[in-house]
Image (cartoon, rainbow over all chains, first blue to last red; front, side, top):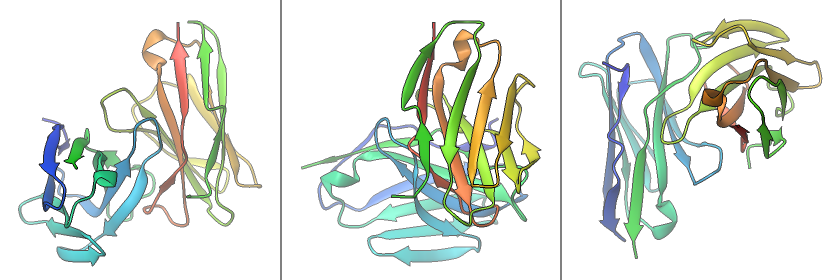
Length: 113
Length: 111
């Protein structure tokens, strides 16, 4: 079992829909959680960063963390064609640093105009 | 834009050769990490440097080595290239050790 599981998709939804992206993890040492967006042949772009259970909102994006279930989610409201990309979840143990980020495989998201 | 730059954008090498990839971090970011991303996979942690010292390493062999310089630049060196080393190599800089900002990557092809 991989430390971080993420459905690779592709996930295809119509423009304007609410998108839900999810990751599960097995290592209870993970305490800091990130979501990155990666366009084809580009570097990952940091979207959300959180370290506590609950919700964190930034514009159309909401990150949700449930440490008891080892489950994190990213919600995208009013999805746009420009949101079409691969979304990567990443996490790191408390204190981070020396272990580096552990990533999921990424979910390929397609927003249909 | 993250302010993290990498060079070259892409390059082609032959199996057995050596390669050096370069990264320029954001000013003030004392931590730089390097990752390998194979096609269709998430990035895999290679190692991390903090104030010019390696302070963490993933599951990569010693032929992957690095340097960090005082001017916020860094290098990833790979010796004895293998076909499986073909990937996108990413560097990420950080003001602390968790929130990491990635560069555009260098695409390496080994033939």
